[in-house]
Amino acid sequence: MPKLLKKEPIICLDQFVVSGMFDNSKEWLRIKEMVEITAKSGLAIYPMPLEHIVETASKFEESARGQHKFFRTISNGYHFKHHAEISAQLLVSSVRGNNITFNTFIKHSVPNDKFEGSLNTIKQNNAKYQRMISEGTLFINHLRSNSKQQSIAKSVADRMVSAVVWINANELIDRMQELVAKGGIITRGVQFKDQEVPHYIDLIIEYLLKKNKLLTKEAIELIKMLKKERYNFVSTLNIRAHIEGLWSIKKRKETSSDHIDLMRISTALQPADILFTDKARKSDLKELKFDVNYGTTVLSGTNEDIDYFERFLSNLIDTNKPRKLSNPINAKS
Image 1 (spheres, rainbow, N blue to C red):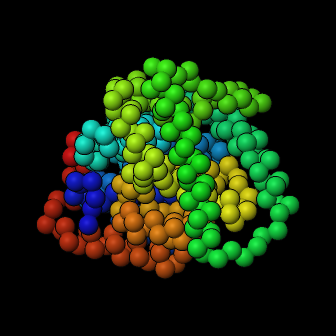
Image 2 (cartoon, rainbow, N blue to C red; image 1 turned 180 degrees about the vertical axis):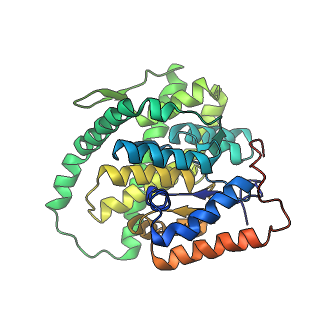
Image 3 (cartoon, helix red, strand yellow; image 1 turned 90 degrees about the vertical axis):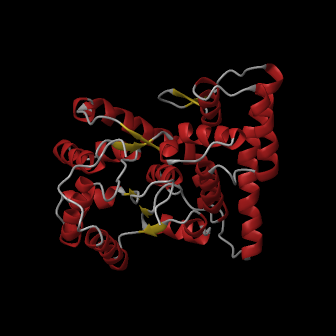
């Protein structure tokens, strides 16, 4: 059943799916044909994750341009908003009683050639991002590689993950309390070797203040909600914090690819009807029962999952045969 008051299913494609379809890999040929039909006909929506830009830029130039053009075609101008922007909207909607809708997570814009024209700059920024993630995870990865992995009872592991989530949520609470007490905050920077970037919690607060025009009384109410529920009402932060907690207790080494996957997953899981990710992230989501909690079918690249997706698309087309499948998607739907 499609979510977010949208009749068309929302499908989040991982980079390996887009790459497989673009390269006309044998296992993806039939699916590519059906994805193109359902996208063009408006039977399904394939929003482009912002992480696609980062991942595609690391490929050879010809492949990068081709894959982006293909994804741009099937996305029909739909793309996920920035993770921090969505987080701020979910937070403010909770105190204003606003509905969580398609537009909370996804924007529509006229397709353009900015990616192709800015590819060299994007590649440079991607290289910086990779270095910052490596720098930011160097210490924790060193600790984990030198720590023995011990078997932990599930009840204990759950409490440990919850503790990580609470620590994360408490940082937002502290900054919100400072905002209320002082009437404003100065956005902190996180210094890396290459450059300084805004602290993520403060970036969310910037969105709350500048875009959402958060009022003092709303900030006070948010603090109360966060203290009581932590991130349970903010899917983007809830998913991100829980998976990071899972990595922590399992002493899993973190890579830049892991963090790119994490941003895409935590952005898209709530609105998506189907979400593709790799086997490791699928395992994380199932272990946390987030696929069930958010009502999302999570697929990886296994033969079983590819067959499921092919059947899903085939059924979608068959049940809508009376519709004129050559009609382009209505951008305002």
